[in-house]
Amino acid sequence: MKRSLRDEIRGRVCIPIVESKMDDALKKIFEASMVADLIELRLDYLKEPDLGLLLNRREKPIIVTNRRREEGGRYQGNEKKRLSILREAIDIGADYVDVEIVSEGIKSFVKKKGKTKLILSWHDFKKTPSLKELRNLLEEMLRGGADIAKIVTLARSFEDNLKLLSLIPYGRERKLETIAFCMGDMGRMSRIFAPLFGAPWTYASMDKNHIS
Image 1 (cartoon, helix red, strand yellow):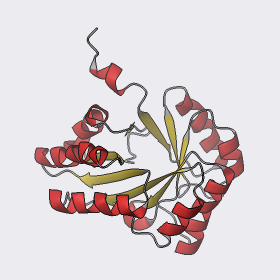
Image 2 (cartoon, rainbow, N blue to C red; image 1 turned 30 degrees about the vertical axis):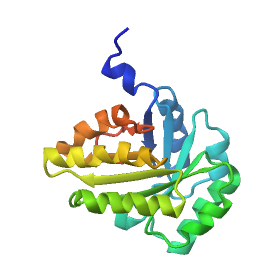
Image 3 (cartoon, rainbow, N blue to C red; image 1 turned 90 degrees about the vertical axis):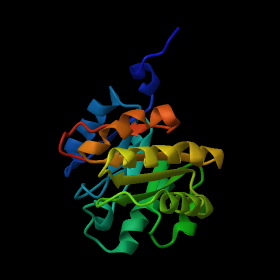
């Protein structure tokens, strides 16, 4: 039986939670769990996150992220504290932890991750670099100990989508699960087609103004 595009992407959708209050975050996690296959918990949005409560109530796998400002995040504390919160998520038993490849102390995450899968990520909100640069970045993530690589850039042309999507089979050839897509109006197609190229999941927001 021929499979439709909807069938192909079903089972591969992650929804980010971008609330500032715990009660709102718990409500959104419940709502998102009814339609998503994974939940991305953006701790940089939460003012006073209770990680234990958030993770113990999960019904779907959760990706814990504490995004720094340079890569589109809202975390306002110091870098040491930001990373210590992500290490706490590992201790509690998060399914995934997403850490920027440029962060210090990546090796410490690799050493202590246990059953938690490590996502090494990188974002460019201004452009899409050359394919050579993107492949070099993917190789760096592989050497860094990533279980999953995530690269997201701003599309300024249709061709930028193809650059990012081509990273997915490139990574899989190296035994590295790869998530790659573009931001911006011109990059929307890459989010839809990423699973068809072999990405483990794609991202869809419940807030039309939010970009993961």
